[in-house]
Length: 80
Image (cartoon, rainbow, N blue to C red; front, side, top):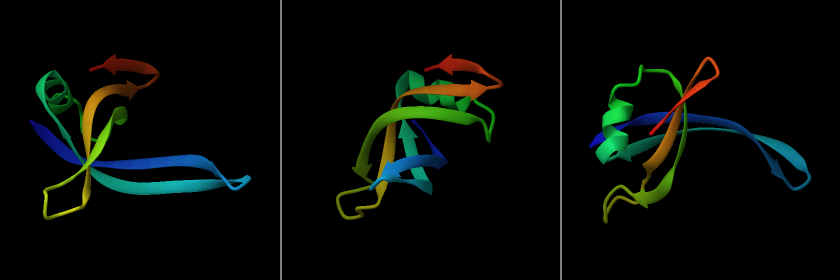
């Protein structure tokens, strides 16, 4: 298992306009994804896919469970 906190920044279309979205979110990864992410340098850009689930049954704070990701560094991607 590997875990951390990511920062998301994007522009999203909403109600005919553009909205800037910025947030921080805790994440978890298991198996091969966890091993590869653990080797990545801190602060690198990462494009991740997964699902949101509550931290625990009693704490409903969402956590991103990463099942696939790309580390993006100077135009190159490392898939996991």
